[in-house]
Amino acid sequence: MSDEQLQLLVEEISNCFFHKKFQHQAFFNRSLKTTGGRYHLRSHNLDFNPKVFELYGQEELVKVIKHELCHYHLHLSKKGYQHKDADFKQLLKATGGSRYVRPLVEQKPQSYHQYQCEKCQTLILRKRKVNTAKFVCGKCQGRLIEVK
Image (cartoon, rainbow, N blue to C red; front, side, top):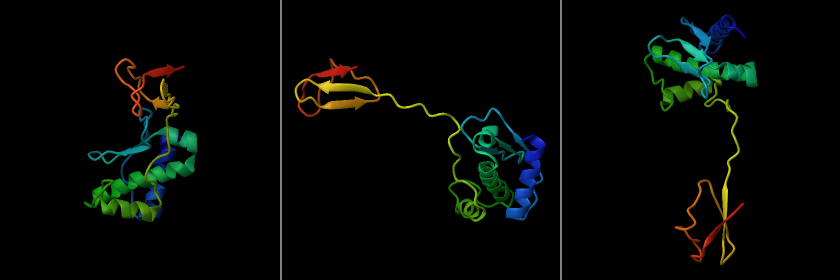
């Protein structure tokens, strides 16, 4: 999808769901990494992460567009445009926009360090490495041994 097609899509969604014209620019921004889109308070432009369209298709992109248009129209009408505001939550629900974008970066699996107590054989999992010379088992104060 090109920037021109995105602009037309945003204008169409604005007319259909908000019954107001979108009079600024909408474009793709490859520098966005984890967010689906962004509304600029000063210029009133909208930029969107192209990965939303690439990974999830037009249906998910439309939800993100609705979300950003909620910010846009509420801000211009001097109402509560922030995520915490009731006006924003109400308009987002009425238009069917998404509250959060689906994950855009691949989540790497969490690795754990495993320790076992010498006395009671309790298995302990930790995200961070533990100094076994300093820390002991919480149940019996036995010595911890790292399990490979």
